[in-house]
Image (cartoon, rainbow, N blue to C red; front, side, top):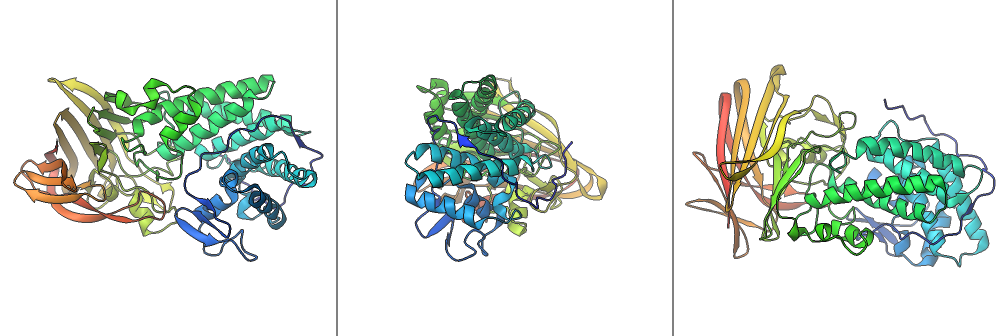
Length: 528
């Protein structure tokens, strides 16, 4: 059971002397495009100047942007003199325990980035190094005092990773306690958060990639320390990180980026290719080359299924729950949605994430209408509220893959809350007989209802109607044709949010239906 987070109102007092144990530095977190340019910071595709007395609490910045500022992931990518200035400035200016920099999530990221930065900058002035290491110890004590049991999920795992990391890296009176506390949480959370198929239980490729990186970096730290606890931490983190990375390969499109499942935005986590290059020594042929992993695949525990061919076609089908029952905050109302690439290009894509701020855009991104599935009576499949809340939600009744009459079928069914206390049942089967992918949808709900089937195309494609249906093309290259049996689609435009803070218009298809008690739909995508 989650424990409430007590208000953090006082910084830890002096902890006694701590020093970093000598060892080689562990390479920093993988950098994408954000960071410091000398006079300002860019995070989430938004630049703000770094100046004035409020520079660490930018008035115009939202919570996630501020978290990125205080996390210091950018530290290894800037000049050492700039890094030293920013680290010492942070220590001097962030003395309010209620400030964002003392919240446990940015603490967890910053502590380990500072540790590795000090290790990689051996020429630091002794007084500055002493001050930084003392601050690291104090920050770790602050993290230990506010572990995120109330949130659980990836936050709690990040807390555990950093307690282990700091405890293994520091030599002082509290270090061994941090190791024991971190290891206890790590052991318990990895057993539940990493599913038997290797996927993370919050079902976001973005967070799964971030956790895989954190765990495999921790394994590198533990490998440099000689102790029984270090051996245990190294084994646990290496095994879990490798399993997360292995299953992540299924959720990558031929363009090298992740499927936009649940809360997933591009440009935040390291790509799968970058993770493989860094952590898989010599390259595992089964992991480094996605083109060799052809045919059907299943992450049955997560509820993800799919198929690839040798022509750059990739189908990812989501027939899993919105997330773990105790933490569905990063889940979307997207059951039985799918994404499709053809000839290495995305053709059909979910919407992604524009912001975590509570607003209509956040509600849209999480809602059923933003995904390639069916919406009934204008309602979301699950009852979503605020930015990360979910009340009544869908339940998955069945999911899987199989072969029938010589063809591959992916299938799933779910039941969710409908109007007036009713239950809406939706089942979808996807039959793959190249070059045709056939869809059979069935809805059941007592009484009269309206349903809308949506298919969101990737940005940059054109969508034109011919006698056989709607043709999606990239320039002069035709990729796929979408057509209904006994009904027609209408063309429209919908927003695409592949990255935080980025909105792109893209074509979409939709078809609306009135039904009483039951609706069956057959439609297809013809690969061109």
